[in-house]
Image 1: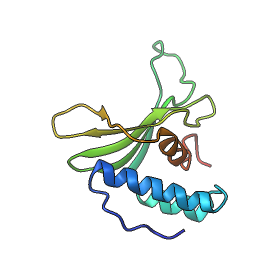
Image 2: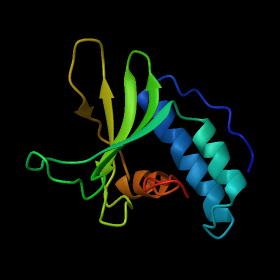
Image 3: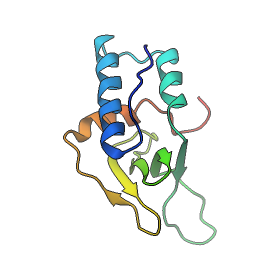
Length: 127
């Protein structure tokens, strides 16, 4: 996979970069090699998961939400979504946040591309 040099300093730049990355993967029959997965992982700031509300003392059933932090500047940009019982993303939304504001969804052309990009990451355990 060729590294894409693209302006990723704003929401549109990141979305365009993600679309081009997924186009490259689609050219390889959609198979994500370990090398491609590593290249994608090196482009982001952090990946985090969290579990939901539960009764005090109850054991967690596992993560139910994920965040792929793309940039932490101004604006901060992330892909946010929910996970199924197997820790696989079931939806994905591009969000932005500026200093002193809450995370807000950003309109994008194709949420399926964001979901495919999110599925390049492993959210459940050390695999």
